[in-house]
Each structure stands twice: as C-alpha cells, then as structure tokens.
Amino acid sequence: MSAVLRPASPALQGPLVSPAFLANPYPAYRALREAGPVHWSEEFFGGAWLVTRHADVELVLKDPRFSAQRTGAWVKNHESAPGELKGFQQLFARALLFLDAPDHPRIRQVLNAGFRPDLLQGLAPHIERVACELLDRVDRGRHLDTFDFIEAVARPLPVRVMALLLGIERPQEDFMAWSEHLASFIGEAQPTRAKARNAQASLVAMSRYFESLLAHKRRAPGDDLISRLAAAQARGEIEEGPELLAQCAMLLFAGHETTRHLLGSSVQALLSHPAQWERLVREPALLPGAVRELLRFESPVQYTGRRVATDLVLHGQQLRRGDLVLALIGAASRDPVRYLDPDVLDITRRQGSSLAFGSGPHVCIGAALTLIEARAVLGQLLDRWPGLSLANAAPRWGDKPAYRGLTTLPLRRRPAPVAQDAHWTS
Ligand code: HEM
Image (cartoon, rainbow, N blue to C red):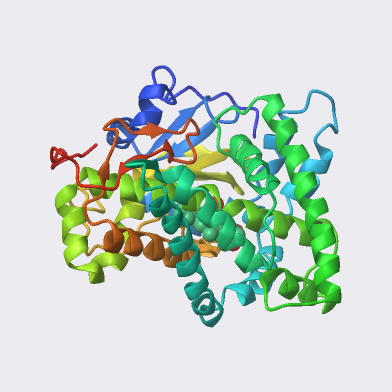
C-alpha cells in the first residue's frame, strides 16, 4: 500500500466490526452506502477502501485495474521476524483466488475441467445420499426433539462433498481444523500473529497431505479432481510443487465454511419467515429461485479484496496503486438501487443473481456444486419435516466479518407449540 495517509471516513466513527455488527451488519452497511460509495477505514488489514454499492462492487470484481494479487502485505504484516511466514506466502500467493492473467486463466481452465456440468450431475445423486444419511442420523435420535442443524448437517455435509469431488476416500478429522484456521486468518479484519501462524501450519499440513494424495492418484488415477490435476501437471498445464499444491489446498478450504454458512443461514432465514417456508413446502419447484434469494439475503462471503493496479479515481476519490479495496458483497446484496425492498426475503424475487458468488474472472468455480448441495439439503428438509421450527429465537452468528454464518442452529423437528414471528427483516 502507498505511504500516503488517508483520513478515516467520517461515516466510520469508531470501529465498524463489533458484536452488534456481527449479529446484524445491514444497518451499518446501509449507513455506509447512504453516506457515500467509497470509504477509507483503518480497521481492515492496516487500511483499506470500502466499496458499498452493487454497481461498484461488481466493477471492482470485473475491472482488471483491480488486481487479485493481494497476499504479500497481508502476510508480511503478520511476521514477527522476516521470513517467518515465507512457507505460507509461497503457497497462499499461488492459489487461483490471488492470481491475475496470464496465470489465472491458465489455471482456471485446468480446474474448470473438474467442474464440468456432466461431472457435477454425476455427483448429484451421491450428494443426495450424503444429505439423506445425515438426516437419517438425526431421525434415529428420536428421543431428541431438538437438534443442532450446524453440527448434524451443515458442517459435515460440505466435508463429505469435497471428499467426493477431490477423490478422497476417507476425509480426515484434520480437514475441518485446517480449513477453520485458514478461515480465521482470511476472514478477520485484523488477524493476530497467532492466527497467521496457525494458518501457516494448516496450509503446510494440507500441502503435505495433498503431496501424498497426488502421488497416489498418479499411480492409481480415478475420475476425480485431484487425478485430473495430476494429469494436467503431467501434460505441463500446471506446475508441480507449490502451484499445484496451492490449488488443492484452496479447493479443500473454499467449499467448507462458505457452504456450511449458506445451509445454516438459509434454514434460519426460511424458518424465521414461516410463510416462505410453508410456500416452499407446498411448491418445492420454487427451490432454485429460493436458494438464489437466500444467497443474496445472507451472503456467506461478505467481502473480498483487491489491490489497485494503477492509480485511478473512483467517485471523485483518488485511489493509489497498491491500495487495498474491499468489495462489500454483503452491502451490495442489500443495495436498494439494485433490489426492490432489499431487506425483505422474497423467494419469488425475479431480479437475477446476486454477487454472492462474486463476478468477473474469479467468479466462484464451485457455484454450481453449491447449488446442488443446497437444493439437496433444503429439498429433503422440506419433504421430511414440513413442521420444522426454530428451537431458539436468537441466532448465534460467527465472529468473522468476511464470512457470515451461524455457529449453532437448534431446530425442533415437531411443529412448534406457538407460531414463530411472521416477519423478520434486518
Ligand atoms: C455458499 C458457498 C460459496 C460461496 C458463497 C462462495 C463464494 C465465492 C466468492 C464470492 C468467490 C470470489 C472471490 C473473489 O472474487 O475474490 C469465490 C471464488 C472461489 N470459490 Fe467459492 N463460494 C462457495 C462455495 C465454493 C465451493 C463449494 C468451492 C469448491 C468446490 C469453491 C471454490 C472457489 C474457488 C476455487 C474460487 C476462486 C475462483 C477464482 O479465483 O477463479 N467455492 N467463491
């Protein structure tokens, strides 16, 4: 980032990220959007521009004047001694998410081959089966009227699906902890050194795991993404070593927390709006549109970053080469210029897709897979337990501003004795 001092935005008197913000960030987003399109905040990674409106978030994600290469200062700022996080940076910086052209399109093409629609359709029945198995397990606990949906379904399902996609026979216990350490580093506004060190240890452990899995897949290839990556490397399309290992680790990480949050927030939002839940029970054909709306209503990724690649002016504000820009997807998803009554959940909304999966060259590669997962879980829930209800009125949101999701979600399988509040908006 350039050395020029920038005054914190007057709209940001005091910290943005607080327990109240984490519980409900939408009033703060609204205030920011209304105060102006671009704000300087010292609160994120030592200083960043916050971009709040839908059109600007989309611009930042699509325009090559905003570079995806942003890990350098992020990592360096957390070193207590020079080079302490070198191993981390070597892998982290090579992940698709942080690359620009020409490396980005080259590697994206290699990964795209593993997300072809026919392959994903082939996975769909397996995903249905995993969802069914997890819900059966809840059903077997008949003595329990309530269960934690996050623990029982939203957390384990993405791990099992990533294992199917990557061709991992037995997902390891460590996968979740590794992913959570990375999420704790990437997802916080000011991660501590301890979190940076944990993230490094987890990323290195992931890369070791994938080194041996790749060796196994070279000997005995299957019809899975890791085998495809090994074959692409043999054809010279992707480099052996950090470049290849970084993609494997990123894939393992990218599909966990995000999908868990989508599942948890979706169930929470629908059950807080019983009329919408009941409509879906009666008309399950509305489910694809409902998932689109749920992604907008509670976007699991609330922001992502870019570095300014060349000095530019945005809405009269001078942005310097190297400055960090945070594209606030969560704020864009509630922008009234883009969405009519944005704080209302409407599963029949017909206003196109949101920016929940990003936009432009880095748009989420796992979006179609996620939709299959969400439809499988929600479809089976609606079918199996139409009388499902919230067992605890106060939702418990996680503490990372970048990833919005619930830590627990107690549900009651039998109809609640008293109807829930019919209207819940932020
Ligand atoms: C609810 C679930 C998900 C959400 C909300 C989500 C969101 C996003 C967003 C916003 C981006 C763009 C980030 C940016 O432009 O900086 C992205 C990129 C990415 N996502 Fe997802 N994601 C989800 C699930 C998944 C899954 C299941 C996978 C893997 C199977 C995945 C893999 C990736 C990868 C590899 C990228 C980087 C793409 C690139 O840089 O070209 N995501 N995701």
